[in-house]
Length: 183
Image (cartoon, rainbow, N blue to C red; front, side, top):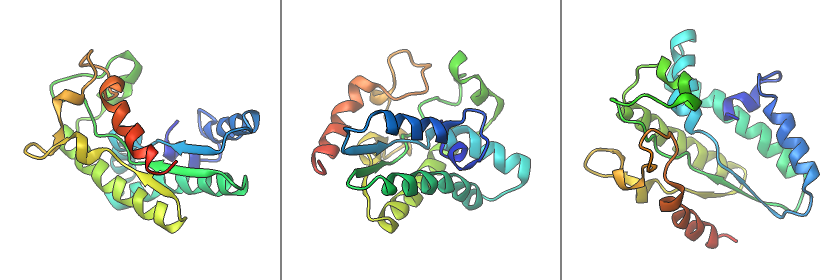
């Protein structure tokens, strides 16, 4: 799901209702971690900017509305710890094409640096949103960004080099350490 899709009443994936049903099904949890936004900032928001002539700020806000909708629902469940994570840095280099699972990404021609800069702005908006709702916020950008290039360090790329996810093996401990500060 995308955060943008959560805001839409009738999204193609019906993601908001899927989340609600999943939360209903698993009632014994006490911590909810929301990790959305990379697909928004690497594809959806660029498409919105192109098709509707919107600014970066306007498209980020469209995506943030999805987060707000989900947060309001989660807060209504009471006594749950809600953690929002920053979106991960884009991994696909300019010379790479996304694999079959991310073929739509190949339809936009935006550099990795521009996608990364959008993620950084997006994460600022997520941190503000977290503060607004008094939620915990964690982010591994500082650990994964190459300060010289302004993009993800190659070390954190998935071993397949074409997977649009970061390496789970190499980033999982970063996330765990951040979560241990909260839980």
